[in-house]
Image 1: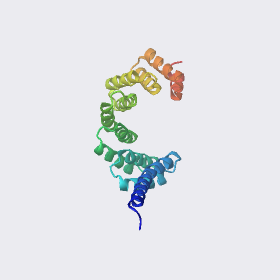
Image 2: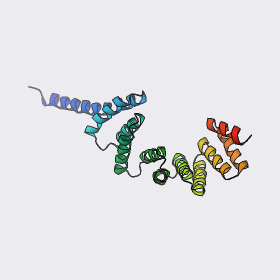
Image 3: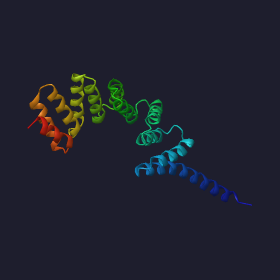
Length: 201
């Protein structure tokens, strides 16, 4: 018959092994994702979520894996689950917005990008994506406002300089536009190189 001390040690080890197994499923999923094995990542994430169904990080990661497989409906369903758990999850809001942007539904994209920006007003990426969606939707004044915010939030955001420059060119502000595009070129943005050659030489 096992002593009380041995029983305690056995139970302790069992609980540690169980918690490690749960952690391993999430970690294994992330490793599969990093190596491009997205279907296997989803399987591992599913295993983890049977134990922790409200783990917003892993639900989001699973959504990204679905996205990589081109399963956009499943991806958006996961991103929306994350937003239900945490309405201020910037990554999930941006991912939903990107899906609408991909579908050329620019007003819906802007709606979600704006939510992401409001969740984190210091985010240069959220401001940039919001500006791009507004730009595509024809709301050029608001787009310019958010390009400016994106640059103010991160002065090394080369894409923000490039797209703001493109908008300035569209508004016939060639000097300012080419200056922004040159700045983007200096930051190594390849598309800016092409724009500069086409419009600023």
